Length: 178
Image 1 (cartoon, rainbow, N blue to C red):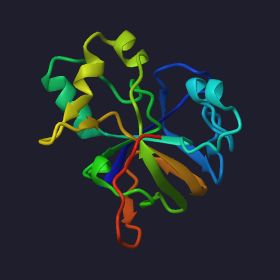
Image 2: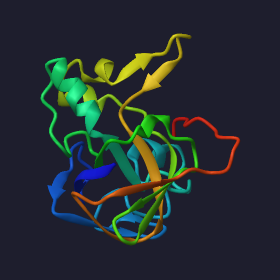
Image 3: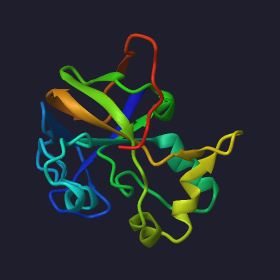
């Protein structure tokens, strides 16, 4: 389980720029990223209530999703879907709420929930929204566009860093949309 790439962007754009490393700041998110802060920064949520706590300080996507999308004819590169961290070898969507991820030598992130893909993904590439949504055997919606988290301990994170998983105590709760 490792970090494949890291990305950030100081502007509210759909995609983020891949960088050699990112600095995580405890309680805030990714230094220099438009979504960093203690209060919600995602535009749709700011319109609903700008005083909500920011449970979306950092966005993680599994590289296996990019592989799946490539198999369906889409061209999606690291950072294109707005993630801060692209991972490989870790079932992000299967982690329970409250899971903690140790990234690099110092950073600690707590998973808060699933990313709900918005219409911007469809503007990026037509058909992509449908491709990142699925249904399970019971007809329940599966959101595959990554997970969100908060930064508990800061530190530098870069491609190649190992990821260590710390599961919360049982009973485990499935990730829900945040």
